[in-house]
Image: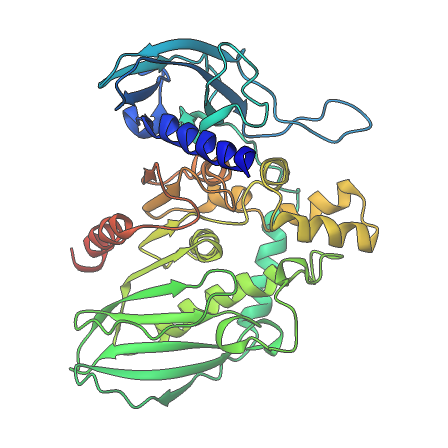
Length: 435
């Protein structure tokens, strides 16, 4: 019993000692650096105790893209610079700032690990020795990331044929009124036919007062639940559900549309889904209450990819605002994150598709290959800590857009867009809706 009590007291004292030190990693330049502002990682250590404390601080910087290094193990993340270790002492009731300056010269994004260990120059990876750690991504010259297109010679012909097939399908638009307590708008469920005669649907909101209005199309994220538009009094809104998603999702089937039809570019899910995006623009442009010269689009994740694809395949959009876009730069995507790319790679193995054929099929649907066709202004947002659609892949497509473009990087965001983005997006969109 005495030994157990001694252990509890020792653990309590250890906790108190650790609690005396606090750590904060600061964010100069919002963790996105350039040739004129080289990477620096300041770590602030505060000692609230009454005795001096000494610690080893370690910084490790790795490439975000894994690289193959042997025939028996597929890939690893390469350490960009030697681990930096600093032995520091913090006086009682004082704080110090320890600044790391990693050598990063290649445009891209990097994984940083900061560790604090109570062992003098010990191995910070040993269990029980680490009392603080933080993992985060930093960027260096993101607009200089080079990820060349791998579009096939018949890329344009492939999409021209798909658009011709879509044009041959009568849309058969149906507007079904939805009871609504908002007296300032009219709300409808819209049904229409898209490529292959497949039905797609969406929610359509138009101001109650007659007139000509600009329109905003919302493209939905992967497996997102459909939502009713907010009901602006100054614009029309349309929330599209592409085939098999949103309003059209079958609860008895899986949600792995990413893998459907992977055996052939002509049968792949996104050939039809990308045509659904154009059919949505067809619908908006067909409405007498829409000012056809002022149609914009926005969306996040898969919806961000849809927004970029729609602008690449249809020049009727006046401006677009994609956030954390998906479906871009497949070859690097699979080397950065595991999910949901592992769905595709598992399907590839199941179907026995060679790597060459696998990447050739995906190249037709890669946003990176569609980006050079975009002609309208673009505002893109990126979550620097995104581990689903990593910023490297966002910029792989963005950097190939030839039109007027802008980006915002949110240093603490993952695979989402915060309230700051909604405000920035609205300001951008209003410029093209009303000016």
